[in-house]
Image (cartoon, rainbow, N blue to C red; front, side):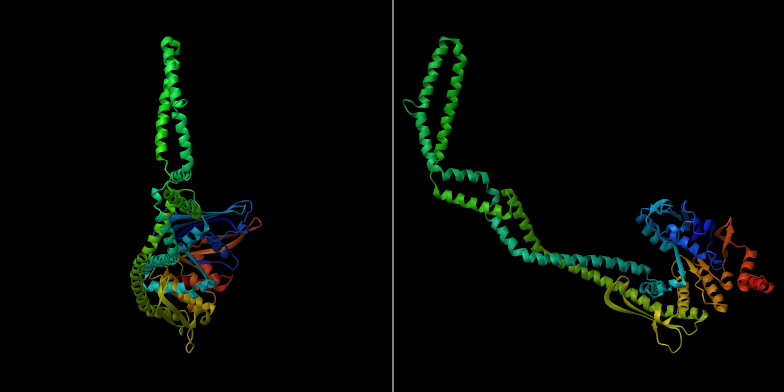
Length: 550
């Protein structure tokens, strides 16, 4: 409920600070006194966009603050979702700076307007005659029926199942699309995989193959050069090996005669040993040289295949080809496994669908039982409100389609007079009739669910006499379960408020300001008397006012 409202520097309001209680509160005032300004300020708290023209003094900021008791609204999860501090006494503040910038705060935490609007929907419902268009909204009509049907918990279950069902069906479509594409690519991927798999890439080394190819391709030249090398080494007279042996022996003899040659003798000895190793290694290499045209063809074949594959797949190494082959293998296996995955998901969807249908059936059956009760209550209240021949024809028909709130399609038809055909509300009811229907619906809903604070803004326009009394009685009954405000021009309604405020304008230092004041009993008598008899406080009007208040 709204506990307190503070407005500073907004339109004709300089400073306003007012506290409210639970129950039924009426607000009166002459036309143009500023009731719309009060509602405009409250709308800013509920997330309406700010306008710089709203500032009374363009050099100062406008601050509007409201305190709400929210302990009965089950908003803990909302506050947790928005990362806000939950307080049973929650303060919402809105600031409009002279620069035109607007800021909003919930319990001193900054929030954007979308959060404020969502929170505001839980807190206050400002309802005027123009707001009756909500009546023709199908989701609102379902909400009315579901309130009486006590479908809240079942609808939560249904919506949870529907969310899962939609997620699963989206996943199924993605899998089926993936399967269709995979099947298109399957044969090609399988061909590429087999092509790469056949050549046993793990056992191949490109550098070794190229080296072996070079050797086999030039083996005859290598054999010729090997013979030359052998001749240079082993020729009896001038062979390197014989000459080096002679050199070693001669230097050894010199070193025996002079120690100055010891170092040189050791170096020659090292050269001789190294050369001997070279000769042995050359002999081993020469032994491997063999003309092998068949092996050359095999190597050439392998290199041709590998180089073609490298070019085909636009890579540079065998390791990259191995990775491509493994990826292709995964795709082939994945294609084979998609059907099993699809079958598994289809089975889960069918199970979920059966649960959805079952939940929707419970919702439908509850609605069927609630509709006659709703029609009866509406007809009774509207009869009291001067519409004795009003009647409704409300039907829900179950379909195979899963909607956001069940599988039902709704017909919410109305007839205002006997002998008239049923028609849609927007076609069958006038503006005044829609206002009374909305009041009746809100009154009924307040008996079944926790509604936010409701503020009726001159919903009683065009109503007088006994019907006004009935309207006031309905609002009074509603206020047992919720906080109700009524901005009214009718004394019959104003008199029924548990509290009564007056909006008025006054001139201070050549400046017009709007204010709101709580009336005591004597002031209420005078205010209602003025509403009854005009500006002159006649004894009869005062007596009538006292009678209304009693």
